[in-house]
Length: 407
Ligand SMILES: Cc1cc2nc3c(=O)[nH]c(=O)nc-3n(C[C@H](O)[C@H](O)[C@H](O)COP(=O)(O)OP(=O)(O)OC[C@H]3O[C@@H](n4cnc5c(N)ncnc54)[C@H](O)[C@@H]3O)c2cc1C
Image (tube, rainbow, N blue to C red; front, top):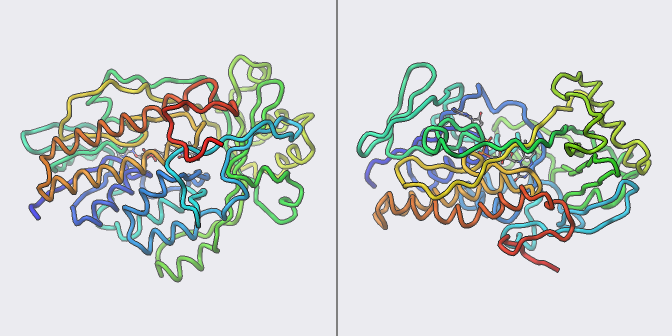
């Protein structure tokens, strides 16, 4: 195989998956990740058939099995259930993406655990604490510049550096970041048997959301690994640095702008953890006792504020040796739990395209152009649907979304 080197800006969900996929194909790469380590961001990620298939394609067999065994237990129903604030079911929406695995479906992961799994064996590949500042194309090569004054050269540069991507800002400066105005909090409550016994069954489905009459929405997702993490690691990747995680239920608050609740809410970024917890308590005042009780069980130290931003789908751009994946090109609101799944999908598709080119099956720029066109066709509809104000209506499923079953 001719020598070929891929530079990857960003070692998040998509960047690490691409690195694994390239390594499996025998292609050299270097990942530049600005954070000093995998870090602590440990919220739950819903997984669908697109993300799960990509992991199967990119990871070695033992790491794919580790992902599967550390995924959430199979829920009663693989749907998003929508409730009112009294716990009455209003409707259920199927998850999007290609068909899920019928035997052991892709369910949900702890984000930090998935990143730790994808980092296994990557000591020589991932450079932590290195921030990409800009790039330049020079004939058949691309050079990235890093914040420590050094630079690196490769055949291709992949922007996997998230919504604020510096690579995208240089390549496609016209693509705007849209602030939706939606804000909220993410948090975790330890899931004990005693707490589980109090909760409505719907909270144990794939995902659940409950809306109050004044503009507050709570979204719930259980994480309970199929097998204790330490046990799975000991068998499948002995010695790997993967932290144990106790079962939890993720409780996210969404505050719609312009609603009565939104108008009363304080600035969540200036609020202390206790004040944020008080906002959550206010959100569920008068709600079903179990839903209000769950908010009491949230670990205050895990509450962090979020603002929902997204990208505008870009018009097709001229293909070059600099390409993009994941949030760097299609950051989307979390309405369909599809951002990480789409980043993984891109990583697998790009690894496939680059492998075909390295094997002489097609010229490099043709392979990248095909990857980009397919990504726009498959993922931009998901971005548009996620950004639609009707995204949480039980009946809202646009025709251009891939949905295994609409029944
Ligand atoms: C609270 C929350 C819940 C979510 N839930 C879901 C869900 O249930 N399902 C789902 O599919 N999606 C979900 N998402 C979305 C999902 O997390 C993102 O879509 C996904 O992480 C995108 O992956 P990525 O690799 O493109 O970007 P990221 O994972 O954001 O990774 C980008 C990486 O690039 C690094 N970086 C940034 N700039 C530079 C630079 N200049 N140089 C070097 N490195 C750089 C960053 O440190 C980061 O590690 C959720 C998001 C949030 C915030």
